[in-house]
Length: 117
Image 1 (cartoon, rainbow, N blue to C red):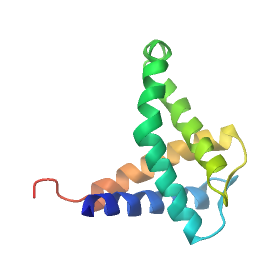
Image 2 (tube, rainbow, N blue to C red):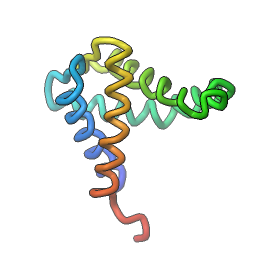
Image 3 (cartoon, one colour):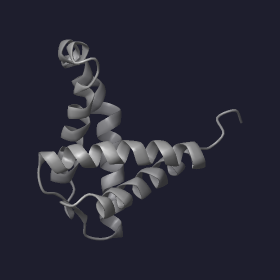
Image 4 (tube, helix red, strand yellow):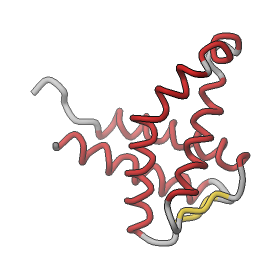
């Protein structure tokens, strides 16, 4: 349970950084940040593996770069599902998903909980 909360905080923080750095991405309030982080987590947990499986031939041909397009699609989809989370277009979603991945990875390195407990 603790790891789930830590992951949620990391994703929320990464989402705030994305909204600050990427023009065309905005969040209305704190509740929107937390809701969007939950929706992004759920989409990445359940829909992403299905999309990766369905696009496996394209992903192999592009040497895995197509997963960036999948991440952008999921980021854009989350903006459609969460009221108050706005992404101007797919280009901004692509950049935002890339920045989100980098920031959440770096935060996980520094903040991540110890799995050996």
